[in-house]
Image (cartoon, rainbow, N blue to C red; front, top):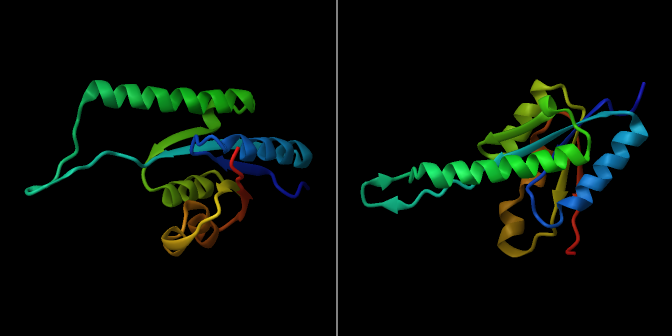
Length: 147
């Protein structure tokens, strides 16, 4: 029985993503695990107004942004030869969505990139730290270095 059977790779499309992608490829190959991919869309522009929060719904811009994110996900997925039915592009809070998909798909290892945090960012935490503390499976946080 392999150490890991199903790895979920979480990407944010930062320039350093290639580091965690390469390590996920190697680990999946070494363990014989199947590999899945997730990207969580969490940056919805929501300006405050005196009457509450308004979500600007410019259909053309939203559609173009979504298509760009889909294209990036498919490029990574194609490069890793991940079956399209094991690729997720979801809206929401990254920690919650990564953990939700991991539980739904019976993932036994989540791989995420982790940047060194300092000051206020260290106190507030990160997606990697939050996933580490809430996931029911193993989590591998890959330290990302600036290119």
